[in-house]
Amino acid sequence: MKTGRIEAIDFARGIAIALMILSHGIKGLLTFEQMPSWGLVPIHLITKFSSTLFIMVFGMSLRAVYLPHVGTPAWPEKRKRLLVRGALVFFWYKALTVVEMIHQYPRSEIVDALLYRAFPVYVEILGFYAVALLWLPFALPVWARVTNGLRYLAIVAMGLLAYILYHSFDFWGLEALKAIFVEDEKHYSWGQLSRGPLVLLGLVIGDITARCYRGPARLWLAGGLLTIGISLFSLFLLSAGPDVNAELIAIAKNVGKHPPELRFALFTLGGSFVILSAAIAGGARLSTLFAPITAIGKNSLQSFVFHVIVIFGVYRYLLGYWHNVSYQRALVLTALLMGLTFLWVKVVHWFRPRFLSR
Image 1: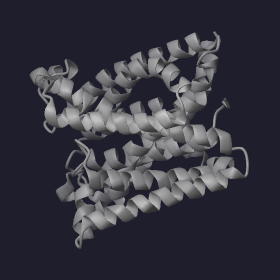
Image 2 (image 1 turned 180 degrees about the vertical axis):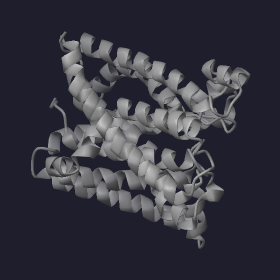
Image 3 (image 1 turned 90 degrees about the vertical axis):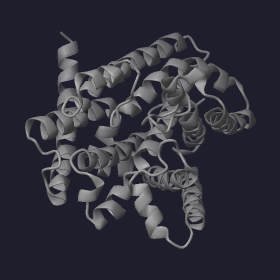
Image 4 (image 1 turned 135 degrees about the vertical axis):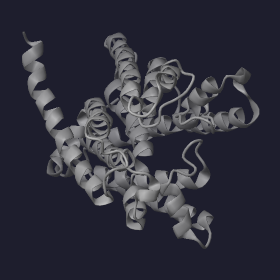
């Protein structure tokens, strides 16, 4: 099984993080009502690709970096590294929950979020990753042994199970448990079973990418992903009906995001496939051309932590920009934040070997 870092994956992850920064940078300072129409569509609309793309690329990274070591002497150490990574993500999830909420919420509500009686909004995706990294290290050996047919079946089965549980099981009246597994309309959360199929889909795409990326078949793969993306967009347009603009505005305002609904899923999956297609077609050359985006993608956790601290700790809390800037200024502040995020990961990259070598 082929292994090794694939530049296109880092670049695609960097695109996902950049779109996330754009989304959080604007929505973290303004309400939807404060955004001009062109700010909602197309600017804020395209940020909806970020979370779906991020989760799919997570699966691709697992395939490239970890799955080839399953069944080898290196696997116990690799599995341990995944579990430690999960613990680190969980720490930052809870720490950034405080950072996000401290400006607006009373202490009692912050404590509720820390104790899983409630959920934050902007940093909740870290909660998804923290829980996923508890079970994925034990699921990967099973995934490595089964046939491709069973892998495809697992994707469908997980999505179907999420749908059935969401509609027919109350999780013993525990809303938080339901939110963690299949999502709940009262909470902004990412369900393990409802979003898990995206991780598995990423594993499948990552396997095909590992086989095709270094040869001429890479362009065929990129073309296939582009075709799927366009097809999903076409299905979205067919389901949207005559008033497509109203549907686009609704998606820009997160309608259908939690729990995931069909039109939102079609739109965001379509965009994710198109971005993946461009990343794989461009290969190492595109990753080098947009080196800052690739660097952010290689250091995704550091980038996420930094941008949340700046938005909520600096822009909102220290500088008082919450609901107090124009949309154009929010865009400038967000562009500045992207640049600062790149500088931050470069500084950390420079300091880390010097600090650890002592």
